[in-house]
Length: 411
Image (cartoon, rainbow, N blue to C red; front, top):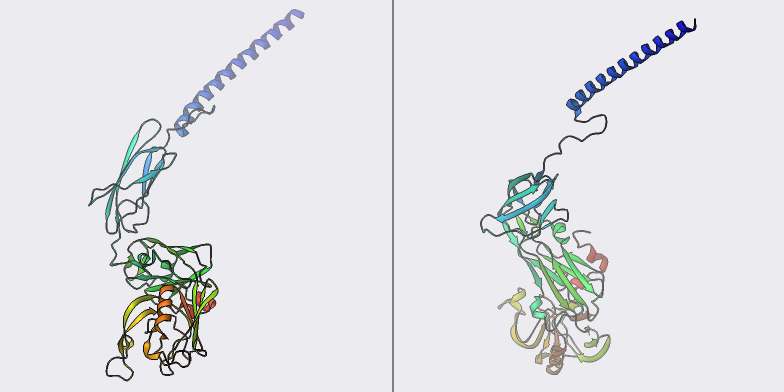
């Protein structure tokens, strides 16, 4: 009995071993079949083996290759994907000149840094490579827009004219464009005046060509003004684009403010807030009263021909005149000056008899001429005249600060 039991046990063991071997063989067979199928389907194995081949290196150009009518301030950008840039050449097709650019630290992005020209075609030739050394080349052609007209940002006063003297505390900064501006907000965004020390200020569009900048109150004496127009490539509207960028610097000299009173027929002169001189004057008569309010000196000449025809009162008309005057400084564009007038000396200090000018005797006129200049202020009160219009160079200070701010295209 014991023998038989042993044999039976031994037979069961052999059967179990055979079954185990068969199961293992089947498992190995199934695993092998699964590996083969998995590789053909997705390129991976159950053990996390290597992935499929990496995507090939490629190059893109922005603006798109063969793009046209592009703004010249739009940078050309070349990018490499799945690799790095090895060479980028951008060339002005007509001139043969190269456009300089900067390459990112990871060598995947090249960006032009030179400003492009109007109406020009640029060819782009870029090369890139992947980690294994495989290379690719991409070419393109980009053409910039051709404006119908280009507007220059002329500055008033001309920086060169006041480089030695500086400007007075009342001086507005004026950009006068050579063509009308339709898109005023777009242009104004590119204009700036930075004052040192900082002072609040703003722009006012006098008309379609002239935009003025003034501070909330007169400039502080000793201020430095950095004036900038970043208008190249800016669309002015109606086919007009900005011709060039411009940055200039102005310096504000000592404060000189003259206060002319039509009631007392006297003018007091203040230097940096302190009254330094008083002089007898004669303002405009009732028929031609001097404008009331702050005026700003815009021009001066030791000798100047005053001609009423410049503001519409020509020879043959009642009140027309043409005469040479000494020590003349213009305070508005419609014929108002501070100047010597020997014919009105007897009226100076007691009555107003001029055509709108501030008349002085020779000694006072010469002193005024020697001490006050461009940008200095003449404030007229009690003249019986209307306020100086904002458009009458420079009527900027006739407006309150709230009124001035409403003249901005960004208001």
